[in-house]
Image 1 (cartoon, rainbow, N blue to C red):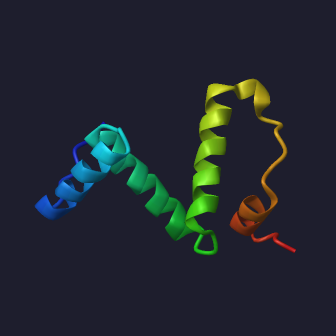
Image 2: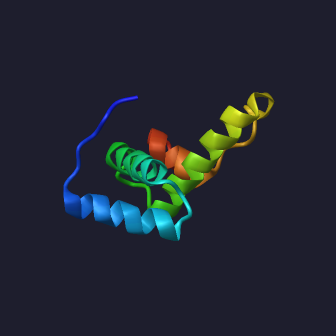
Image 3: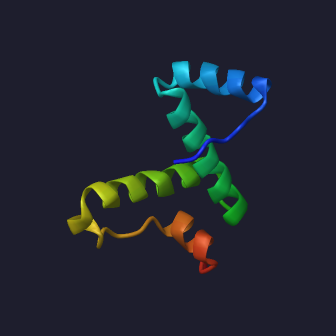
Length: 84
């Protein structure tokens, strides 16, 4: 674990969002960082598709026996560039 310094304005935005989403401040910041990272790596995906990927990742990490669940066509194919 490391420390990330952010501006007071961003910290306040994280604090407000964390309260609304019932997450800790650290969990909210980590969520936004994951969403942002996926958005940069997959510019063709919308927010809903990014959340679907995060949910699938969380499900697979908590249930490794379900790793062969059929993939969501649009999000996964767009992420790999095979959406045809």
